[in-house]
Length: 399
Image (cartoon, rainbow, N blue to C red; front, side):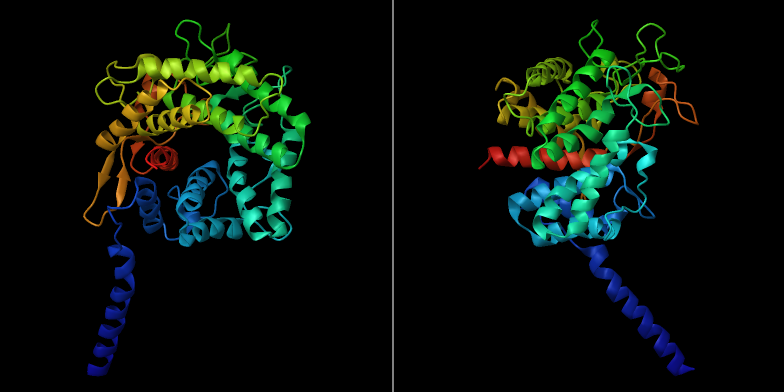
């Protein structure tokens, strides 16, 4: 009996000892914010497929967003464990024949494209042919992606005739980078057309903003019967659009016809973002066209996205240098208003909208009450990834 008790005590002590390192791991407060955020996420989610609160394997845009940001951290600071963390997800999800767990091409969802962006660098570094096959598979989706008569992609097959600002980030940067890396200059015109077409369908001339989405068929209940537009300008949707522009422009040659149209759209976004920046906190509201109104709140994901986009656009000469002040104010405000650090140094981002969409089985009306009452949570990857990227841009300025 005594031996059994001793054995049980020994096993319990061993389990506690094994568990302690993960639960008590600390993040050094002297590290740059981009690294601190990355290490915090790696502690919270020991396996990279667990990111975005996932209990099972999933191929979706959030993994690509965060792991792409982490690979950027690796590129700047060279910590191999960060690179290995990102590669582990790709290795888990991509099979030898290039097929991808939980990816179905015929769903024709632009959301499934974004995670493919990490495979460009992973293939470049590992030379494993399965990643090239997976890249080719994802690229092939564009050939069958349903379109409107003007060439604009449907956001998903299940959302006919709808263009969402979100979808531009999900698909266009991958499309542009694939064309660049594979010498397919004929694709640039299609990438440019996606941005221009979406802008035409979603632009609100009354305030210069872009609505979350548009139903070109004007049949959805959330769509305006005349314009097809959704009711509001959602902060994160415009954040996706801004990031899509600054990321895709890197791969579109300067001489390409229509590229100036993208710069004009980006410049307009910068104008509106500057105008709507909260003067006290430097952040931006969940519903941009209702900034400051009752029930609205300063939201972390769109704030990080705007800061990143402004920093990068200034650095690459896409917009006037004066917008650097807006980005710096936004970044400082983000640290002051959305960042919390616990006793072990783990970094938490607060006040992120978990999700917002339009239509669907549980119908989302897209009215003001809908947006301000969606779930708010901490450490949402849609805030974490852009914050890491914004931090890297800020850290470049300090060198």
